[in-house]
Amino acid sequence: MSTKPGPVMFVFPGQGSQYRGMGSDICAEYPLAAQIYDQASDVLGYDMRVLSFDDPNDEIGLTRFTQPALMTHQVACLRVFEELTGDAIKPDLAAGHSLGEYTALVAAGSLKFEDGLRLVKKRGELMGEYGEGGMLALTLDVETARKVADNHYCQVASCNLPEQTVVGGRESDLEALAADISANYPRKRAIPLATEGAFHTYFMVTAAQLFREVLDATPFTPPSIDVLSNYTARVHEPDAEAIRTRLFFQLFNPVNWAGCLQTAVDMNVGSFFEFGGGLGKADTPDSKRPNLESIIKKTLKTSNHQAHYSAAINAVSINAVSINAVSINKIVDGVGPR
Image 1: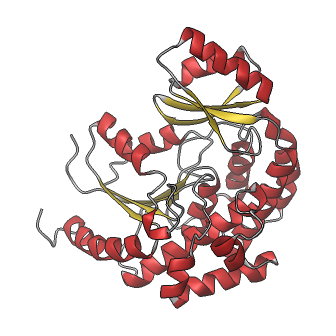
Image 2: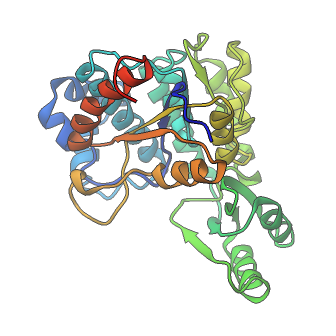
């Protein structure tokens, strides 16, 4: 079991972690967060505060709006955390799940926030426009899930854990797949997900081809820290064109999040910090729980690897984790008690 403090990793969740009211608390408490929301509004041409805080037209769940809203919230949480800690916590590695990979590149300085917003705005528009079908979360390993999916014209869309795989396909094909699971794997589950289409599958090929034009026109610089690719589950190469190609392939290939976390374990990451988004039926931001916490902790347990995990997803947690992070940083540097 690994016990030695290791590198610090920043992680960012993907679609599904958005909610009405997201960001309202941090903007009310921190002027820096409010400035980031205003900046996003200027870039996107609509009021990000109204969309995120009130969502009067029930649009935050639409992919074209979800992705910019999540990136804005993630960056706001990150910047406030940096401000509260005096920028004392320096990450060695960053990663994000699907949309979150773009925020990870922003955090690494490879992608400007404004350019990132424009990218995910277009990405969300194309995914929503060309999306077809839906997605199911299966409590199956990826190889078994792939065999079953192949029989029903479906495709693996995300590998989150060794026993948690998401598949996508047409609704009728997903219904047949779910019936197959029920009949042949009675102890396993097929859980429908609320999405606008079969993301990260062959249904996204047209969206990816059109998105390439936007990727090609977007400037990338070498990341200041390592950033993991969903497509390869390895560290992005510093070359801009290499980053673009990985993001292109990410759109119609499975998100290998389990592989990304295994890479983090192999790199002996000692502290995980999650930024932005939130889950749960409660209405207020301070009642939300982190999106990636369960997956990360299960991975650590399975890998027999010890690491700190903290979440900065709302005003309450950002305040708390900022205080704790300074203590963790002292321990990592050998200053504080073990």
